[in-house]
Length: 390
Image (cartoon, rainbow, N blue to C red; front, side, top):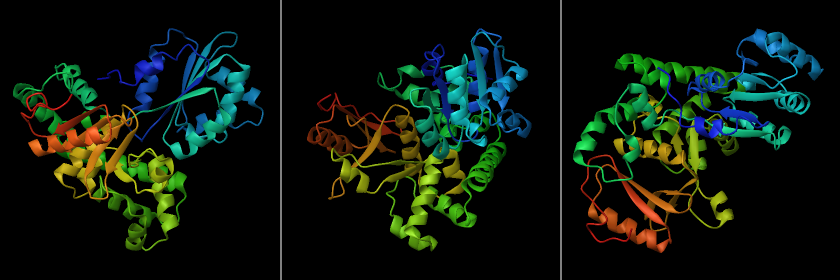
């Protein structure tokens, strides 16, 4: 079953423009499926899909003369003289691909749709070579709404967050959310029904990531070291990163740890968020918090509390909307997430009235527009009931 991804409408609005559409993301999040979904909805026969994981396909671009590359594309199925559409999957495997695409966009009527998983490589190159000629999107694992659609669950999730969640609604959703938070949002995992199959796919995705991104593209000399770092970061989901402590535990330099963490972030395995502050210099120097790209990896490879896993899941949901920070006073008082420097989110397994009062006070102190407590268990807490400002 193929469903329309939530990212698609944003891309659809840009199809008629000349700019290349670049879709980046973790391996196996559904980039190829989305690419083919877009391709099917373009009402033209002048289009071609090319899988660059096939070495034979990569030979199309093994030309110093870029006009000869265009001739190769003509041989593969596009027609000259009219608007053509070229869909390239896993572009990080082709050397000089941004320069090639820039030339072809400038000299021929080609609209490119591209996917890649090595963001550390592609973002920098595209920024330099395709300035003003591309739009970059990140495709993440399935959101909970997408998960429900793939599972065939018939419920209107658009109402959640816009009206009070009753106990009946919670009980309807809870069993689905339990599965979602345990095994994550990778499409291949969701499609499996049995637990051992799900766990097998999670391990297979991790192995693919390690072999293709870390071993093949990362060129790291100490593979066991970056493997140990991954598991260490999983175990510290939602915690602040102490680079000095991590380097001491792993027995490597601080610089090496920083480089490894940067690589893991730019290949989409981890997400880092900075503290909420209006001073940019303070933000850069402060410790960041780490979250994992999918809760399935956390539960499979780490020993992490239910609260930390739930916090990671909530983070992934908020991250889709905009910029995310965390807030913490020197006294230790904190807010889990602040979205777009305007809305506070506190994550609790079972919230209390004191949690609500504290968040209401911090919202006013920081002059935020709004705040929410996100509860894992059903809760009767209501801001209106207790007279808090909305």
